[in-house]
Image (cartoon, rainbow, N blue to C red):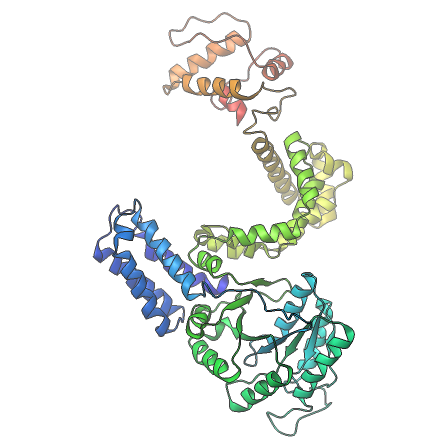
Length: 544
């Protein structure tokens, strides 16, 4: 997550010098705490949050929890992870409060520019995807074109919008006489929307309210009036993750003004330092319910403090990745693809299907960012071009059905045609085919337990089954000498024996078992009884 990239790097560096130490001294711990404190302050985390955080980490790190640990460095990381989870809101995270008798009323509040209108569309889309029937309400009648923007967002999300008032328009339509005034009554719009929702049987109402460029009493009064008129089940405070040190002051003002029930972090994909997320929940005691990390409707997720702490410490977020995969992947297709991999019949059509399913999960950068240890590859990750997937798809679609089923028939002229048809170079086509061939081999070996359960790529028959072959493979590997001359003599003796010739009687040659697996014998028969010289290190080379 871009907002925490700098913090992740600095925290990773803070732990580096601990890894080589079997026992940590007080000096080591104090140095690490100093680096953590500097990293948090650089990330714009509020000082009133940083001080107790580092004090708790130091106290625990100096205790028996670390001194008795087998790996003290990992124990310190574990302590920091638990304390990060605590300040992000461990124990207060919860789902949305839904009304027993619909509609559930959700009111959005926050400063202008925090992303409330866009978030209303994302929340509506998320609720619709979860089986609800949401209604968006345009109660921001002050910001120019705010009503129009909500209508556009609602149309994209497939969620209806209640907008009886046009609000302020920038095209010369209804205008305000002075800054801060509106062209309609937002309280009446919010109140009428509830009656409309009940009449049309919408089970959730999301009210988008007006914001200001700064906290002022007029903003709070309007928000309080809407709150008192509709009595919402949830008041979500939308805060821009890029707001920095001002996050605490803003959060406190809104908490005192409208008494919000939950927080939504927006713009987590920005290049800000992300300190708001580490400050708001701790200072207000209100849970962070959702996080928005992009412009797309799907760039929206439930906030889990423990998972976010893991991401910040470069420990990944495999649970979220699995949840997204389970939600988007077709289980039947996945099983069929796995069966094809095991049988060695995985073609480019199947690869294209898998690629399209992966694209449903969202940005490849965000997916890769959930994998543990990716901070070390941040440079490569940032340089990754999302359009590479489009180019790959174009190349595959430029092939004939037969070529996709059997890529081995693609010769030079076919490659040139595919390149021309997809708008790519021949080298790009070659690279894709090469990568696909390597991936197909790897997947087959993985599904067949390293190639020993159902045949080896390149051989028509099976190499035998199970434990016997594993044992034989182990013996062959052990029998090879580390002496180059001796190894060459052993391999020559083996080739002579397999070819039916008498050995030259080298002192280095060892007796070999003449019984060969069926698949290897077929390959030898097809090659005139000759074993190709030095196959990457004897028989083991056949299994690579």
